[in-house]
Amino acid sequence: MTHWHVRPPTFWLTGLLWLILSAALGLALFLGTMLGKPLPPVFRVLHVHSALVGGVAQIILGALLSFIPPLLLTGRGRPESHPALFLAINGGTIGMLTGFVLGNSLWVGAAGILVVFAFLSLLSDALRQVRSSLVSPPLNLWFY
Image 1 (cartoon, rainbow, N blue to C red):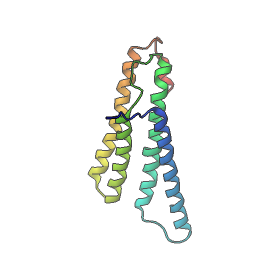
Image 2 (cartoon, one colour):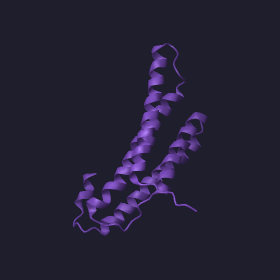
Image 3 (tube, rainbow, N blue to C red):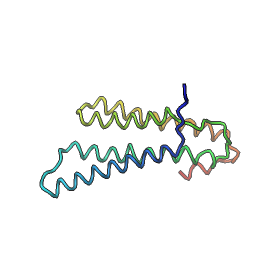
Image 4 (cartoon, helix red, strand yellow):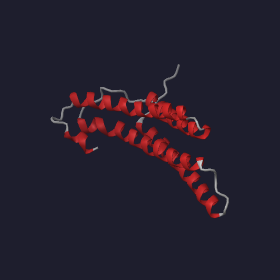
């Protein structure tokens, strides 16, 4: 069985892909409106959430994974690969978008909770690193 390596730059590139897809959808929404054939309203919701949750939140998650350990001077006592976080944020985004298309609020809520748990797991990792930080007090963390 091979191990799937998901490093922080993968989060950045996937976030950029979500932003490009969202921009294409935004362009389609704009052109549809300007040409007198607007797309259904659900596409606006898909446009916004794919950009914010799929793109921006994923890039922030990748940046936090990259920059917290060097700023806290904690060394390499943590994993380099984060496949569970990657699946959680992307699965949550896809689930959220699917829930919007189907009009199923339960799917949207469950997928949103999955995205929140991805960030909360990172928060617990960051707090653990603060306790073992060589920088005292670890004020560098508060720059974020």
